[in-house]
Length: 124
Image (cartoon, rainbow, N blue to C red):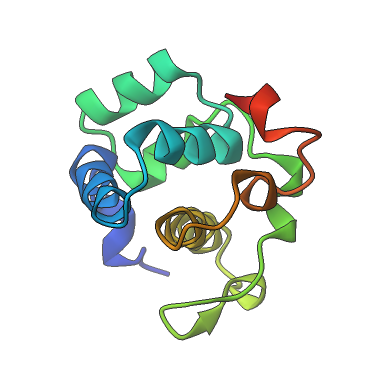
């Protein structure tokens, strides 16, 4: 089965679009990066490297230190599809990230976005 076109897009080209989206809604890049690191296990240096080196979304998730075990608690609709029903594991991870970005942009509380986290402050 051939991969979806989005799999080959670079994370470095998508991240600035996420930043624009959250900043338009009054949120910060730091909040955006916090949810991405929560999801993927990247630290700030690893995230910066992933943005700079042009790796694809497929490589971004393949190289991720550890997908957060609470990622399965991310539910809802993104692009007209329920994220919990997406069968392709890579597409599901991408849509998890999209859903988190949407929640940041909508002003949802960080403690709610970071599902299962003891404290959003501890994640900062």
